[in-house]
Image (cartoon, rainbow, N blue to C red; front, side, top):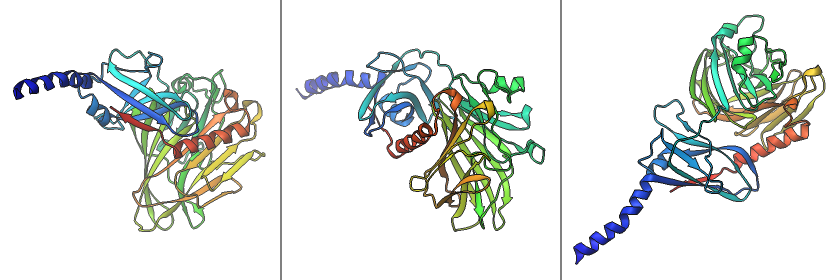
Length: 376
C-alpha cells in the first residue's frame, strides 16, 4: 500500500517538475507613484536558473502574457564569462505589477540601442551612446595637445539611431548633418559631470584615461571601465577606475568610481558641469543631491541640458566662474555611485528648463524607489 501511494505521489509531482524546467515566471512590482517609461529591469540570472535550470541561453524568449509579444532582452555579463543578469526593457505604470514568462523559443532580432568603443583613430577617444544621447572621454594621446580637455564631452542627437561610427568616419561631427553634432565645449573643466578629488579647495584633475575595458555592449546596456594612472593631488597620490554604464532610453549614465589612496580619512571630491558665459537656468538641490543646468542657447545649434544626481550626501553645492560643482566624499577602495548625463532641446523631448529639472527629479525618485523583482 505504501508503495502504491508513493508511486501516486511521484506521478502527481512529475508534471510540476517538468514545468519548472521548461519555463519561469518573472513578476515586477512598481509600488511607487511613478510611471516608469523605457525602464531597464535587472533580473538575477542565478534566480532564473533556480526556477528554470534547463534554460538554453541561445533558445529562449521573454513573453508578455498580456500582449503575447516578445519583450526585448539582453544577457548582461559585467565583464565576466558567466551571465550575471537578464535585462528587459519595459514601461511600468505606477502602483502596478507586470508579469513576464520565460520559455523556449527563437528570439526576434533586436536593433542595438546602446554602443561603446575605443576610438584609436581619434587620439584615444572612448565614445558611447544610446538611442537618446552620446558622450566621450579623452585618452592619453590627447594630453598636452591643443585640443586637450579634462571632463566628459556630450554629442547631441536628434535620432534614435546609433551615430558614433558614422560621425567618426565622416570626421565632420561639428556640423549637424540632420542627426545632431558635437558643439559642447569641455576645456579644462569637468565638462558634463566628471568627478575629481577636491583637496584644499582646489580641483585636482587626473590625466586622461590610460586603459579601457568593455564589459557589455548592447543591445540594451553598454558598460565599460576607464582606468587612470596615479596622480598627485597635492597631499596624497590617487588612482581611479571609473565604471560607466548607459541604458537604452536613459539620458543619464550610471558612474561608479573607485579611488585608491593611502589615507584612512574620506577624500573630498566634486562632480562638475562647465558653466557658459551667458545666462542659463541653474538648479542646486543639496537636499536631494541634484545638480541641474539648462545652458543658454548656442547660436543656431540649440540648447544642451546637463544634470548630476549624487547617491551620497552632498556636502555643498555652488557655482564658480567656470563650473557648477557638487561636493561629496569617498573612502579608499569603496566605490561611489552617481548619475550624470545630458539632453538636447532639438531632439524634442525637453524644450524648456522645467521639463529637464522634472526629469532629473523623476529619475532620482526612481532610484529611491526600486522595483521589486521575483522569479518562480
